[in-house]
Length: 119
Image (cartoon, rainbow, N blue to C red; front, side):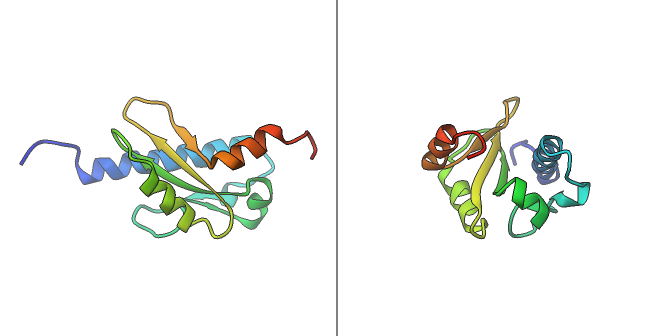
């Protein structure tokens, strides 16, 4: 059997990415409490980062996280859509020794970039 990364190590990498996203959301919205944004346990169904109703008002996204060496993004993005419960899905991916990236729908991205302040 070839040597590779263990299941435990893969789960630890995935958990670390979920926690990084959780911490980034909490840092971006200091009015939120730690319980408003939680990293989901590995292997649980649904969103990877649980967002409280109070947090959802400030951050109306559903987050799916994937950590891998390389990516085919459409399958994980479809999973994010399936778990989004009507909120805008975001797929956060991170390759080995790479920067974390957030993948969103192009139409939503254009909407964000053309939105007027306080609009």
